[in-house]
Image 1 (cartoon, helix red, strand yellow):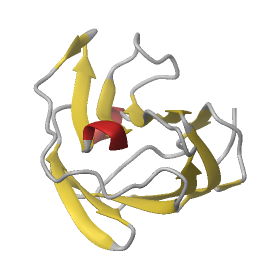
Image 2 (cartoon, rainbow, N blue to C red):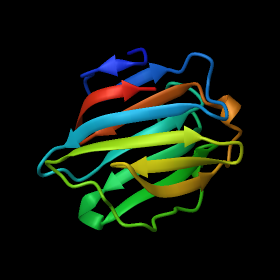
Image 3 (cartoon, rainbow, N blue to C red):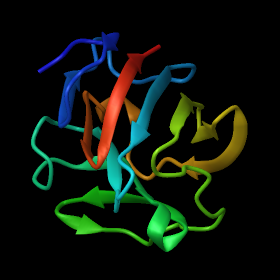
Image 4 (cartoon, rainbow, N blue to C red):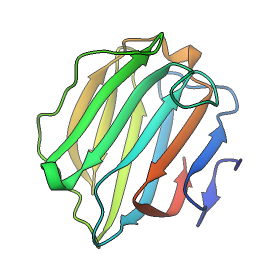
Length: 143
């Protein structure tokens, strides 16, 4: 397990979020997908175990499908997917994802441009971990 900020951490990446997530919290992820990548995921979790603990905000970057899928896992059940907006992340190229928590939603910027908003489905004060896994290398995870 890492602590934030983390420079050049390995994947899968897991970190406790000291103080949790609140309005104004910001997370920046810099890395690059592998050239033949299928997907990678970012999860704002309510505990450390993926698939068992609730994921308040799940982001699945899927360039081969042309999508960045957003969802919530609550009580081991997925909610409705949001996939509009395409996929501005290109395998083999660096990316930067910035996620800022607002009172009612997360705001996501990819490579410096607004990408989407995602309404909270689980209260953000329950978020205590960040998990990143899949076909990516990481350069930086932090504020």
